[in-house]
Image 1 (tube, rainbow, N blue to C red):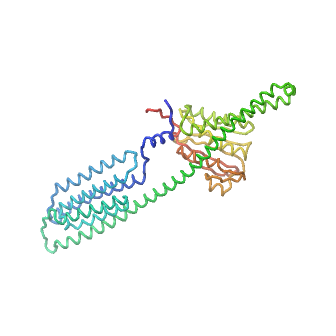
Image 2: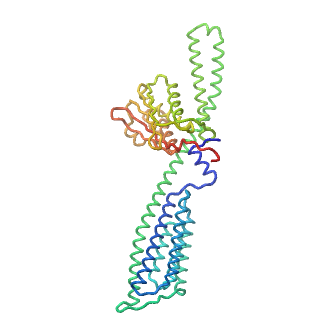
Length: 442
């Protein structure tokens, strides 16, 4: 079985045509459900008031049947929201159609167009104009106009018993006033909340566009790194062959100093080959081609040991207080991210470094501290953007840019700060679900 991480599961969902969840659509659909509950409660109250206090005879049984139908529709709508899929325009349109149908049925049973509550159609039309695409909002307008026109000729007239000092026109005016106040209040509340949801959606889309641009930048850098790794393979192999020939030359092997230098050069060539191999392997794993199973402690301990082996002179203190071991997928991208942060800290503080791993709730927290000069305030405010660096090197600042993007794709976040006693700290927080194992076919 092939283990898959959170990223692999997200890619698989998209590859199978499963649409991502749309928070704005779900929130707006929930608002329509809440409005329907209010409509059902208002209809119950209206039937009770008109029947008991105004002496108007209503067909209570069919009107209660319409209310029960709205309740059943709301229950089905709540069950729909349990599915973690985005709510489409067609579903919102269908929900508003059901609301229009329910309102039309109640008006038909209670006087048709003479009922002052016919202006509630404007509430549905306004919500449709805000929520729906143009074609569906136009269709909703045409449907409500047709329903209103039909109610002018087809309806059950009210059996009204006139009371002294209170005529039908007076009741009609009072009903219009109540309906106007109700319409105005509901429009203010629900349109304001829908507008807030739409603004949230627009902000989210802007963030997604920014992430897409950044990820495109990362892909281009990855292609360049992969190409450079392939290109470096040939000269490194040539150097390895030349050094092997030198080790067999009597004129060179007779000199102990030259022999030591040749051995040191061979070790560096092997290290360069290892780096090139890891670059190519990481590029493959980042595309989801391969992943290895390990445990949390083995992964963290190996990560610290491997980095320290490449920097034997570094004063690294490694602390692992993760409370329990657990099977995880060995993410080469996460490994490279931690290496990158450690390399940045090593450049400014080679003698005093701290790597601390801990569990905080359902998240893994990795904290890297150094005793360097800390982050410049301007850099700290723009951390995570490309080419934000004070090192003065061409292309500087890409390391933390890659760190932020990789951790974000794994569902985590990055936080950086300057320490009160001097130095800086970078904290990576990842949900354990991002590293958990899911077997194929499960």
